[in-house]
Length: 309
Image (cartoon, rainbow, N blue to C red; front, side, top):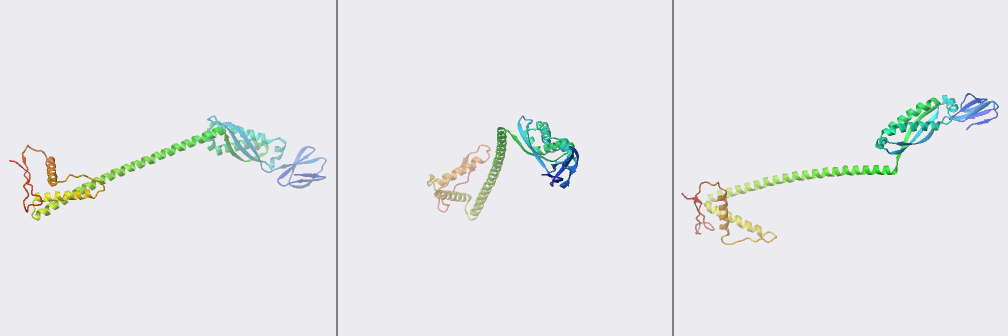
């Protein structure tokens, strides 16, 4: 505020006084107290402080979305151009708003709505450059331009949120699918490796069993038993071990058993051996089973299979 009383003129800090003599600009008065002739001289205080205006600009984007852009322009009067700012410009605010609208309405149609959100800094730079160039000649300094908001229709914003949500759900579904794929692949690889190791284990077990049978046969033949008696004893032992395993199970298993069970089993094994041998010229085979005799094994001896001729 300023005050004029008699011959004293006072200007507040942050202001400058525009001195007019009989209506003609004659100079500036700095803050403080000065003497003047009140009948001929007048002093108009002019603030040099920052000012801010809010601009609301309606624009249309490249994808035909109508938006309202909120912009804040901060400016002040340059001290060395106070005369131009005071006497040549009646109202600077509409001039600045017009420049802001001009820049936005020529820039926004070249971008989609998503791109406009990403290009705020670019548009702010263009607005500040254009407004500064237009207002500097009139004594106004544009200090800063801020784009505070880009407001679209609520239905458009809702649609955008739904699109983003759907896109994220699709990405999440793809990630879950990839995770399930990896789990299934790894499970398949683990199963294949387990089966391979199981086969190796079974093969090693069978090799160990065969080696054990061979060692047992050799040991029993060294004790004086014939090969037929040794084979008969081994089959009987395996048969009894099988019955023992069945008896220890929780369920009920019906196993045919009789005095001739071991002989039947032995005959089946012998028949299996004969079936797996390479077939040559037809030969007649004879199988002779001797009766039980004292001192010839537990259940008698079986003669070795020999082709006739």
